[in-house]
Amino acid sequence: MSYKNREAFVFRLWEREVSEGPISEKENELLQKWKIHAEKELDEVHLKESREKVLLELESYWKASAIVSGKAVKGFRTYAYKIAAVIILLLSLGGIFTYTEFIRPDVYLAESGDRIVHLKDGSTVTLLPGAELTVAKSFPGSTRVVDLKGDALFSVAKSKKHPFIVHAEGFSTKVLGTIFKISQSGKKKAVDLYEGKVAVSSPGVPVSVLQPNQKWTNFGVPHTAAVISLVSGKVSGKKIAELLSLSFNDVPVKEVIRVLESNYSTEIHYPKETEDKKITADFTGGTVGENIEALAFILGLEIQKKGNTYILK
Image (cartoon, rainbow, N blue to C red):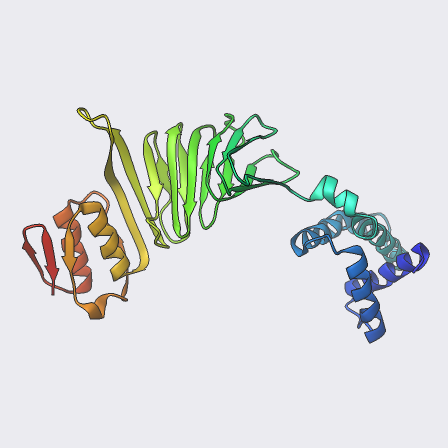
């Protein structure tokens, strides 16, 4: 189709969409061909965002028209449709360059070795092998937001007004200025804090605020959150892990017990019929014995201790 015909085609479809009128089979067929030709390099998420931006920009024109003049509304609607059609043409027909330069986010990938990424706000991200960082064109903006797949070390430029948020796979880390590391291996997620303060949030569990030399982890169990203090031993100098908080929200008993056993270096025997029962519990602040007693109480079981082994029955 010629440019003029394409413009008319887009204009007509846009009007149908706004008025919710039916699209004919022939128009739909042409639309599919047009999409293949014009939108093959655009992903659905950014097409949707672009459409929402178009509607948002047009909203002020609609309001202005209603205030300035109570007449010629139909003529103005036609004018608005033309504006929309032109914008869509820019975003799609000739918009690959526009999309690449102004809309598509920047994606950084560490294919084999580490890759250092310098962000516009002065922050530095060291991507570990296999990691992928996605940064929107609008970064830094009022809130500095990035998306991360894999592992990375962040050195965030300080800003009291503009928080820095990392959306990882299933959890988020929010900071104002600090140095921390995010690790993601399968279901296991972790945040190690070296300097400053961060808040880590994950669906279903309380937000955890970390201090330097502390670590947040889910131990590879969804809806689980723990904060561990990493302190150097006085004699060996090696890092000693101390469990500061531990929360579960609707987690199977077998996963809860696995985490308790690995962190308390103990063994827990329990009835097999309870292993898939889901429980919610907060074991923060308790001793090993107190926490296992709390678990037995939740399950309605009695507890016996033999050496370093606990028996629930």
